[in-house]
Length: 175
Image (tube, rainbow, N blue to C red; front, top):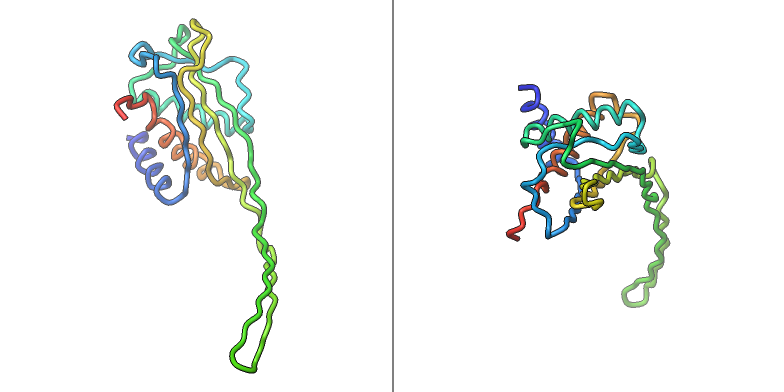
């Protein structure tokens, strides 16, 4: 029930907040061979320890809902990397001249930065087959990020991001 509520909430957030996800995968991969996973032991997510724990808990819950299970003897490993991307503040300067008949006028407009620059977080999730030593699926997400968000808001955001990411796994190879 908790997972269902979190998923519904995540989908609501997905519809409100833009989360962009790009996918890539090895076309020769038989995705039916992969049912169990584990995280790399030297995982360096680029997130705080608390956010890493939140993200992994969300991934585990959503992977289990899709029929994939955490295992000590996994079929594949998951690697996660993330980084903050700071978009510059928008500024503009414009000059205009116009007139009608004998009247000529001019103007200058200057855009002043107001507020803070937008901060986005990029999260890259790789699924790697260690037996074959190859990456077979990857998702790269980018979404807005509020560094001062409450723990609850952070968990909601991770739920939304992972829900959007995992819609692409396994890939629908018919398209």
